[in-house]
Structures are given as C-alpha cells and as structure tokens.
Length: 414
Image (tube, rainbow, N blue to C red; front, side, top):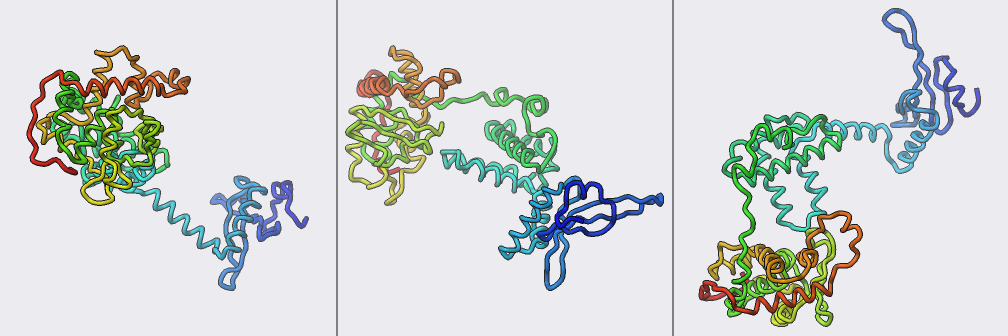
C-alpha cells in the first residue's frame, strides 16, 4: 500500500481495516451484515487525535459522498483547531447543538433577528421601534413562543382578526411584518412551504380589503393659499420648535431630517445643506438649496447648541419628534400635520408654477418611479431646485389666505 492513499485505491479497496493517508486522516473500510445474511462494504473517513491521553476517532463523513481531496481538506481544518487549542470532538458536539437549537427557533427569536438584520437599512428610529413593538406586543403573545416552522394560517388570523376592523392600518402593517419575518425564516432554512401571512391569493380570501374597512387617510395638508398667513403667525413666536417648523416648511424636508440636522452638514457660504445618506429615507445623499429665508432661520439658531441646529430642552439633545406637531396644535392647526406641508409644497408647484414635475419630485427627495430614467439620471437638478426653493420661500412670505391664529403664552423647545 502506498504511503499516501490514491483515489484509485480508495475506490477499489474492499478489505476491511483502517488505512492511513497521513496528517491524522484514515480511510475506514467496514464489512456489514444485512438482515438477509448477505454482506456489504461501507467506507468512511476518520480523523485520529489524542484526547485525555486516549486516541479519539472523529468521523469526517462517508465515501464517496466525501472524496479523498475533500477528506484531506477536512483533516487540515481539524489540525488547525488542535493548534488553536480547540478540541475537534467538543467543537463538533457544540455545532450540532447549535443546529438543533436553530432548527427550533421561535417566531419571537426570528422576529428579533429579522429586525436586527435590517435595522441598519432603516433610517428612522421610530420605524424600527414600531416594528419591534407590533411584533412583540401584538403578535408576540399569540405566536411568539411557537416554533417558526409550526406557524400556520390559523395562527396568523388569531393575531389579526379581532382588531382588523377597528385598527385596520396597524393590523395591515403587522400582517406585512409577520410575512417578512416568515419569509426570512424560510430563506434561512428554519421553515418550509408557503407563507401563511401572504395577502394576495391567501389572506385576501379570508379578510376584507383594508381600504374597504378603513379608507386610506393621507397626511392632512394646509391649502397652499393659506401657507403665507400661517407662516406670518408662526414667525410671531420664538422657540426651537417654532424655528424648526418654519425651516421644515421652507425646505420641504421631512421632520426626521430637520430635527437630526447638525451644523457640520451646512455650508452657509454655498447656501447648501447636505443630508447624508444614512439619514435619508431613500438612503441617498440629498443636497438642499437654502433660500434667503431658510438662511435667516439658521442665523437665528446660531449659538443655541454647538452640534444640533434645533436643540431640545435638554443640553446636547435634538428636538423631539413631536415638537413641531405640538407647535401646530398650539397655533390651532392640530387637524393638519407637519408632513402635510410637503403636499402643500407639491400642490403649489403643480398648480401655480411652470417648474417640471421631476424638479419638484427631486426637491422632495422622491425616488424616480421610472427605473430607466432613474438609471440615466446622473445630476440632482440642483440649480433648478435652488430657483424653485427661492420661489417657494417668496410665496410663503405672502399673505393670501385666511388662517386662524391662536395667541400662544409660550412656544419654546417643545
């Protein structure tokens, strides 16, 4: 027999025994007696090493499922473990236990892993908190403890049916989140089969369409004809929340983008605010041209905080997510939303200006729906957007409509 095994020898040899290949690797040939009295030959790979002063034989897999070349690679891996002080047998048992544990992951464990895996791609901390809250507090008590591979349609319905009519939007979002978690579990190999939380062709046969139960409500927007009067009343007050709301309207940006704004994002000489990609909904850097009115707001905020443009009531913290909405309520506009001013801006663009739609959409940092156009679009139409935002700021300074103004006792860092 050669010092090293050959592929031909491994294939043809049928004599029972252990045949060394070197490097602690052995080919084991065994004769097995079947129930009918006949015999068969099986071959497998073994790794031999000393453990607790005794020889230990670690199985590396059967031949021909594991070839000679593959067995040598596996033996090399085991020798590396020994050099690092890792016992191959103990390590193998630990990996088996881990696999058995993951085979029986609960829905709650899968939900946690799913959110952890995707949180870095979600720019809004509130969005992450909502995912965790609905999955833990609504789905959790019903299916959280169940092995993910045992969840069926009946379990999903138990999470949704009772409040589908009364809390339609929340339940609809929960359904989508459960579907995503179960899809993740399937791809990871923790469950098989169809997704019991899918809507089309499945739950849509069992539950009424959300829009039929509770029609979709858009963010309540102030008519653009009234924005000048609103801005006039807003500018009569002071406070970080007030200035943040004014700046949000002038830049047509989102609440989360404004309250998280830091001074290093601004180039006041270039009249530009550059919002980094990690703070944008679309995960793309967004340059915002600053009108003279927007620059005036920033000038008023200078000196309040070294980091945040719109600081909160506690030193070193940004304005709260609800601060601007509180200003709206105190001014008597609680039936409108801060986000609605983006719709106000968009309506004004479409109905009173000649600016192209794509300029307005890019000013709102919206993703182009036409994938082909998006692929060829290299610029961000900055110069055109600068003129648009300057026109918008000028319009916001004109009092055209009527607005109910509530006298505030104090509007501070809400």
